[in-house]
Image (cartoon, rainbow, N blue to C red):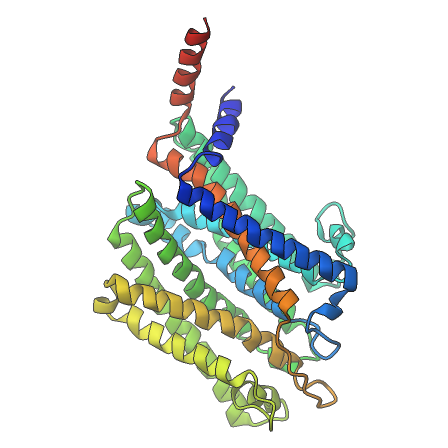
Amino acid sequence: MNIRNFIKGSLKLMFKGSKVYWAWMLFLLILIVIGCASYIYQLKNGLIVTSMRDNVSWGFYIGNFTFLVGIAASAIILVIPAYLYNWKPIKEIVILGELLAISAIIMCLLFVIVDLGHPELIWHMIPGIGKLQLQNSILAWDSVVLFLYLILNFVIISHILYSTFNIKIFSKKYILPLIYFSIPAGIAIHTVTAFLYNGVSARPFWNSAILAPRFLASAFCSGPAIMLILFQILRKTTRLKISNEALWKVAELMAYTIFVNLFLTGAEIFKEFYSNSEHFVYTQYLYFGIGEHNTLVPYIWMAIVFDLIAFVLFLLPKTRQNFTTLNIGAVLIFLGVYVEKGIGLIIPGFSPDTLGEIYEYFPSRTEFFITIGIFSVGFFIFTLLLKVAVPIILGEFNNTMTLKKGRSESDMNT
């Protein structure tokens, strides 16, 4: 009975909202339709409609996949202070971060599907159903940890929200161990993604021992950057109380992670430039270009400048606690990491190729539209999850209310 009330009430909440809510959902649906139409076009004509070729076989899709794995993993930056240190201001918003992680993982899986030439074979990546080659494939391990992390977060959030709906405290005996396990699990999903690149011995640009720590550091910058902006939007559009103290603590933690990200990036650049080995050509192509091939140069330097400005803004308490400069810093670090983990990571791994040829990759219109469609799916799912979670957190949607409403409707019928 309680589960039925919970599901029925959740569906009703999703179909109720202001004009702004329906305009937002309609806007996302239009973008999703455009993305679906572009994907159908890609399915019909093959990956030739993208800008990927034999020289550059991974592109915009895998770049977004890598970035979003970091967004999913970044939820632990809220989980640690909320549950390990029981810090109340963060504990009140940690659920929102985990909802974002669920949406991000779904987008990750969609990017993997659209990158496949034969998406009908995706069932081989499903643990327990497909024929996973765990002994030979890092990608198989990546699919397993992502799938498990999705299930883990879904179970945790579902139990907490359902317990709150029933006006009960969630089962600490069963859920707290899962919450604690989600911390190493979050680290694991991005570490395995880094190993996916590390394991390609023919791509020296990715063969760095600090790639996994760089992935984690950048994830703990970009993910909280999105959260800071989303939390402010939710605070203005709902009755959800999110304290300034919580936002500023997240911003302070970001200052540390931005520094680590910049430090590791600088260490990698120094190693490449000072050693000046034959593999330096990939770093040269990224930062200075080779001859007339310099498409990536302005983007990577823009990313570095954005990261440095964001670091200063988050480091100083005066700018960190000013919402104008805080939001500027959040946007800058998001864009900086997005470029760094996208074209700044993928393309130099392939260019120049093993024969010294340079293929100047830039995403095609089809890739852009499909990517926009996938991000729209993520925002659509996240919005629906919030539509249910926020009323439960505020106490506006619980089982007592549904029972009273059910009795009143029964009395009226009688």
